[in-house]
Length: 125
Image 1 (cartoon, helix red, strand yellow):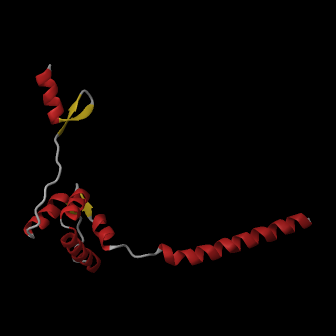
Image 2 (cartoon, rainbow, N blue to C red):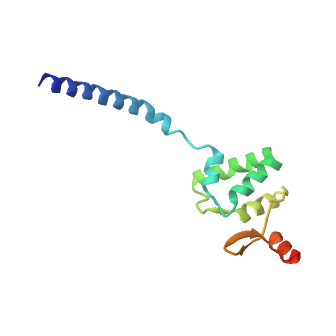
Image 3 (tube, one colour):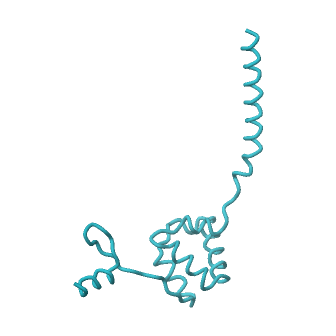
């Protein structure tokens, strides 16, 4: 009987310690997203690739645009997701031109292969 009471007391202490830890950790978990995280959450269809390429070519200008887009998202002025092509168009309209690596992939014997590989194999046969 006495062992049961000791175990229950020990369990209650451990639970109380866990509750205190969880309460103190909760504000840290609610950290606000960075501007870049907000914008990345709104991108689809290769948008992340466009953003990464823009940062590599124009880091300062891209950071300014990301800050503006994040502000629009937070204010509710931009609610729709942004496609990669749309984001690339925005950069081009601002005079920031850069290239993305593109490839055409086709299905060949159940696998996706680059078109250049497939054409090379046909010519080599």
